[in-house]
Image 1 (tube, rainbow over the protein chains, first blue to last red):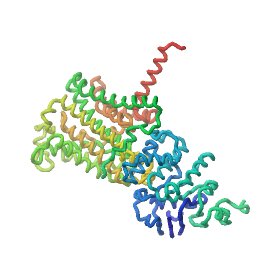
Image 2: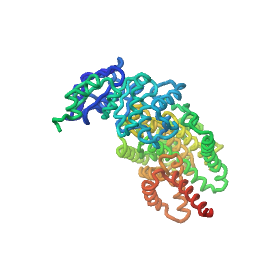
Image 3: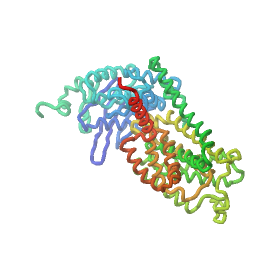
Image 4: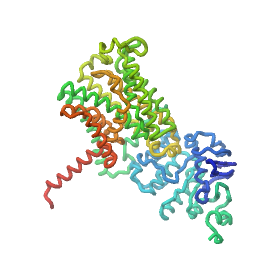
Length: 238
Length: 364
């Protein structure tokens, strides 16, 4: 359960987030909107890279914004980036292990936890291979393995399917759907691929120009007139 | 500062997870043994054979090669592993030398040499970390500028206060004592000869390289790799970026302090004009040429920095030519071999070997 209330972010004269209040209860929730709607800015507030002017974020009873940014991973907040950020110089194993060693003091169980996360995302490469030698799909999977290792509580996925061909998006979609049940985390998914969002998310929230314009059950929201106009384009606009 | 944990054996023991085929495993084992074997052979060569072949003069030169390769190692660690550009390693080397001499000339009982080495390194680590504080806010060119300014300031101060030579007071310098005191820190009797001292320096340098390698394979090394690629990604993984950057500066300064102490105790001692701030840029150049992502590169850099000038002199060439050669070398490294000589030369030699064996073998 994550409750965002009255969140406002200003960069000079621009207001990428304007008094946004959203609740993400459980499971996988979608966050959609056109480019520049404020989705990534919202993720950056949650990660602690951007300081909001006002507003609060409560998640599982914790005031998330009061934690130093690097402490949030240990608390259970994990994320992937729009431009994938698996660490090239490290092996697949070390990429995942480094998250675990900063988030969990369970040294004895580390190896098993890391291999479990690698298996969970369906990565079929030697864990000792350097990430720099992997292709786009495998790097994405490494990044998601970093997000699910240990005991995540909230996982932010920022366009995980960007640039992937359809059959790989399908694999991704099935795996994301298993996260809430099998890893016990709330997933917030940002993506432009509506089939991925519909397949994964029971609930979806829509941002446009920094404002929340709709939220609710995915099927209903995607048929909402405002959403169609803002995001998908309507016939009048054409 | 939490001690870096090296127990996470996965990176040191690849392919134990049942991912390698049996035949593959043999090859991996052989490759795994090859590197320690090469290192051991080189160490034994340096410790046993080199001193027997060379005159005292060249042994002293090689001593300074080993000492400066600790300095180049510290820069390679900061730049190659963490992505922090520091141009004050030469100044920190001078600081290490100053502290060693200050302690060597004594406040009360003389410290045994190993303890002197340790205390000097710790004091230098504190000073280096203070200089590294701006690194928390700055990066790239600005950090380079700040550290270069710090280096210039230190070398100015050094000109003013001089190295301690047994004079009175905290600064320990007296003009009348200049020249009359052997500036060197007292070496233990065991290391009195230049050959014995060379061996000791090689062992200490080896330890510093070992510390660096262990760090890179540990929690700290993984955190550094993340910081170098992307600070947001590191933070999102739970890395305390501030702490690990400062730890990198502390470790690099510690190593440079060790080098400073070794230099203070080596033949010839220390002179204030031996540490100009611009030498920090020369060091950067040789580290780039040697190879910054590879600790072998630090050794190559030490050789370029300290052995090459003497070789040129012995061939009757002016050592100033090196400035030009280093300029060309950096250009070459940046354009064609960003991995540096330490990677490029073995690769080229292997290619040459393959080409020769192909030529000598008759075509099928």
